[in-house]
Length: 411
Image (cartoon, rainbow, N blue to C red; front, side, top):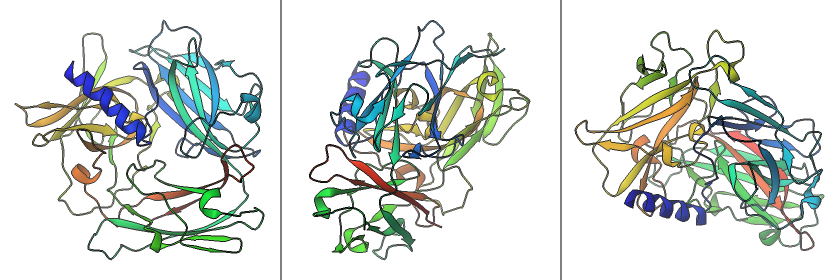
């Protein structure tokens, strides 16, 4: 009971700190949202462009009824901005999920869903942030929420990274960028522009928002003077359960229970906080569903009970989570690890679909923000990609337009 109360309190704290805590039912698994047909791209598309946003997920609850979806337009901070649905979309406000397939010859049965936006039922009328809600009966009780963005090409963003910050810290990465806006009638850049920076597709809580350091005609600059530095972190760890026939990377042992459901025990992990940096070619936290010798990887891949082990002393008054796209980039309760006093390690068993995964461990002190480097370490040399989102709202506008994005790599 105490543990349940604490997690409710944790959800509240992160919600007010803009941490991306989104609804997700316990039976909804393998959620992927991306641009076009590339699972490794962030869910960001050009307004009136040729691309679409793709959402894939599985439902392990075979008895669930028909599912529907709706869209909510949000401001730069992902809060509903109060627009009527007719202001931001053409079509009906609620639509059925028509594209679904039952799993085929799997030990764990599931229903695989796919959705693309825009589609024949929904066309988007404006740029900005959108919250996609999947539900069974009412949008007020979604079983899944997912974010995506639609951008215009109304500004030009000049973006680059710089070497390690000379402040005695050896883990910070710097960004410099400027926003060129010759076609926008900007009167007050401090009020009309909102800039958000994402690292590897996610926002890091506790990082100060960028503010202009220099303003001239048609150009707003955000330079080192505005504290645009970010913790480099470390490369993601990885595991490979694309095959269950032999030992793959990161897997120590595979066995089966009485119902034939596979269990993959991963190799024991250790803290990297005091280790030296080592480059790993990772997927920056993402994963790709794949099962060897399968015709359709999305409906024939097995669900594998996967056992994580982190050898460590117990952290007092703190929790440890497994984190990455595999947890939908949230601190979900089913990815919260338990401490085994006898084994001297944090442990977690969680069902994962066959895939090549990236993951990391996140330490969360009670009633505080996550400490990203407490277990994984932090290095300025870490490969990260950064994306700058520029939102614009004039004094006449009723919503935040996403007028430009630009990405760069720290290498």
